[in-house]
Image (cartoon, chains in turn blue, brown, yellow):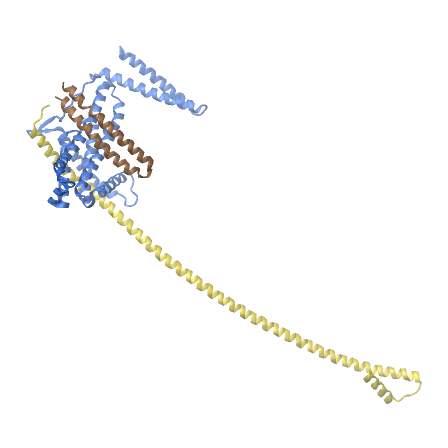
Length: 295
Length: 69
Length: 161
């Protein structure tokens, strides 16, 4: 019963919206009250959108078993599947799929796109990738000093990995970055890099001396904070990504059949902007920690 | 009981939000005083916000661990 | 929440491996070519700037040379013009001198002619006057007076005059 009422409402609002749009189109030549006409046009567009959304949502919820309601099911660690007898997390498989995709894309770029790049006037995709690489170079040069040549590609790889894993969420899969094992692996690499470059720059004795800098009393604390670095990096990324995923899941489950048009708009923030910011922060923090170690 | 603990853990977000608000207020003041340094201030603010946010994120993780059985 | 630590450790190791592979792929296939491309372009731009600077330098040199040439030409032209002016002056001076001397000659000639004319006229008029005076005297005195006497008297008179 309620569905029929909703259908009627949506039909009425659609009709009004279309009539308003047609009226706005026909009265375009006679531009009398400019402000009023604009207002009417905006109102009719909103009415049309609302009517369409309500119509599709009602139809979908009528014919699908999906019910709107607050119920989310998620696990802290991802589901496992068994491949050749080994039990492997799904996110690991997804991240290997990302690597494969990057391999294919990279080969295609290397073989077919890069030779076509014009050396004088970059445009389109060339501009994007050039700006990305150049920005990474500049970032690395500022904080990694002498080692920017070795570390900038790694940071670039991290950015590629995180952005691709943010894209996997758009396909309805669980992003690798929203699994603690993946982020912890990245944190471990950062921890290794911090110590490797710190020791390479100052030697083992210099690194230990640098830890006990103001007074030897702070030595345990410094050790603790150093150990906390990978944990904090991993937990930060994991928490943010999982938070975004849960919010999106909540939105979808609350809307049920009406999840048309609204989740993509919210996804612009939670699935694209938020991961990009987190990528930036992860890379910047890694660079800052390494910079601290080598300075 | 677990759900209660998770909710209590998320109270940490209060502190993180307050810290971020302080940092942002100071950054806005700094930009108003010196608009030409806005790029640097922006990056520092982002870093500081990430660090301030991390407490809330830890709390979130703890809450998840408590909530998911 | 069911998980076992060894499984998670395997996951972490696999992730590490994955990131390593991804690093190699990205570095070899994307990052290095683009970086090389960028550095090539930087080099090219540098070279072009250098070339442009060189070109500008040479252009400046030629410009200064041209300016020098122009200065030289102007100086030469000025000298030539002044020489010509001098020559013309001399010529005109000579012409004027010649004309002056010519005019003087003509004047002198004319003067001389005029003098001779005058002399002639004076002579002829003297003779006529003498004749007339003799006639007048003959008529007045109605006597014959020898022509020689009269002439003498007239000559004396004229000489007095």
